[in-house]
Length: 175
Image (cartoon, rainbow, N blue to C red):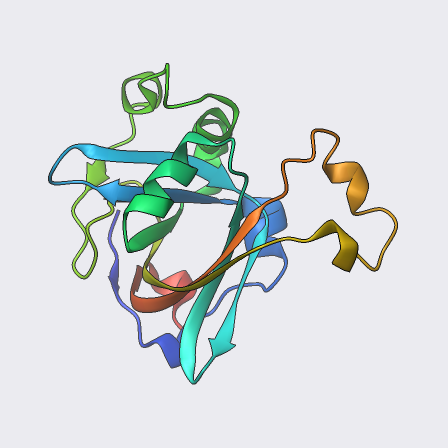
């Protein structure tokens, strides 16, 4: 995939569709050390916080990737082409605890430029992020009645804010 660096002020993504319709691969850990995992995320956001470009992700503590997020200071978000959505779906529906996702999907992890977590050669967009903040979702703070139904096992997400340090994408992501 031909990607180039993107000025973060010119990064172009549909605010809702990038998550709801396309998803991201979230990778955390240390690629060089061979200690990392990847999962699919469809809930999150992009914006600005504390005068920094921001990626916001949420991960349940039951997910294997959570262990890597807790242990390492950074993560990546990679968006695959729509034609590879079945590979993204696989990464979100199988655990890295007992499945070699790279062997199963044929995806190619690649070293990042600013963080230890990998991106993916097949990605149209890669965001390299360093964690700035975390918090746990509190059910007492849910203001809409439909939210609690997402947590029948009471495994509430942990929220992470990551400063986007670098972005690499195809021309479609250049504003």
